[in-house]
Image (cartoon, rainbow over all chains, first blue to last red; front, side, top):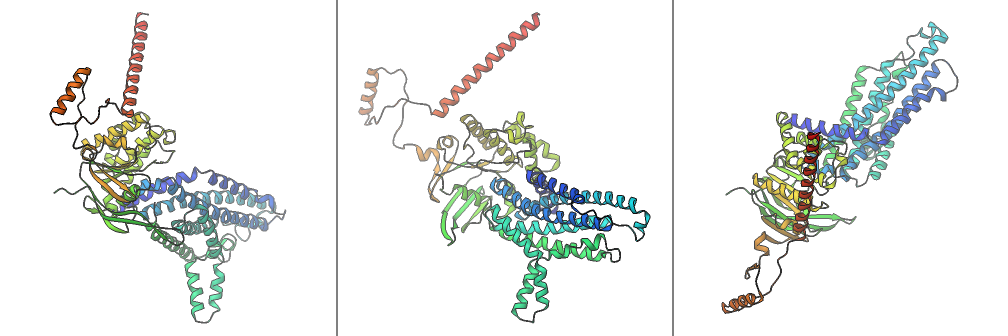
Length: 280
Length: 303
């Protein structure tokens, strides 16, 4: 079977997965709540006009993107996977000349496409609010507000969105991996959230590793640091949007993208190993 | 010798159950062959291993021991499924797609060439009698319609082997009869059909050969007629016989060394009776409608 045929199958499965996902009330509700929260950020802060306001809105927006994006990434991936298993549409599909890896890749891409829409909408809303508030500040303070350059680098807002999307990709792949050996949706969601917390705090293991002497403990902590991706790497919002002095180098962005892709592919391949033996 | 459509050799499947991993044997040393262009019935009560056997044939489960081949190719290979169409029991499909979109989706999954897709989709939809409802969303289909559109997706890539898991479960007798007609049509087109069911009356008139499974083991296998006919008895169906005539027949049978074992009234099966009655009602209804239409046309013409 050719690579083109394989690609077509993955694309078809991803397309139906995405359609199933956007039809879910959960996605639409979460998207609405996130947009409302980001849009209302300007009412939450104290009336501290100046660059502090923009920083607050940005932090609020990035926080909402991470928080709701993580929830959506885990729950949508788990639900889309178990819907197929419980409704037995997976049985009909895998009875065709479809590899299990193609099925998993299609599920992942469908969920990842959903996260792209979510990230894009939140980033657009955030950029719109920042632009509105920036215009108000410039009108109030005059041209001197822009003396050190633009207050916000809007390209970087989208770059941050892209990096978060890469992170959601790893999270969706981790969820798919957990789902591949789990029997229930709930178990998958709970374990995936634990994995998210571990990945968020993984830097502690790395810090501990750097201070350890050679030995099996150091090897163990090093192994842990390797198995779980470090999500703190993706938290570069401040440096991206506001730090005029130190712009994030393109090579760093590329390396972060590669880091995300490697972990995503690794977890999908691990999911495939489990899924191959799973009864459908 | 022609390669059999399915060859199962000494197949055993164990499942690990519970935390301690106790073994549950679903299929036990099963060996059977399904010939090309045959309608083969896999019969057995619930839990007899029919669905597990089908999943192993489809390569969805790995056997614990033994082997399974589809037209000479190991069934675990994905490429072996190119020649297989499958209709699962109580199929569920994406509800928001129309019947045509659904069949088209599966045609593309099976890599039906783009230039042939429209023709392939239309012809299978026509074959299963869903042309009028093909534009409707799958979510609005009745159970019988779901089975038929399921059959269409199983056939859209023109497989040589069609596997139907309980195709008539939950379907009314009319729907079941329609599915049986499609299965016969498939045989006429040279296809091999493997179907599993526990509704024996529906299988009886359909299958060339059957295998009966119980607790994962093969109990009996053979041609339906060979299995069910009483080899040492013959039946005469007689009409208009008087009591004197009957006595004479009995005397003749005795004189010829025979023995009249039982006398029964020939009867239709309830399925056949139901279908006959419904078809009569349908014909009468159609004739009445036609007459009403003609009368309306006549009045319009005279006006």
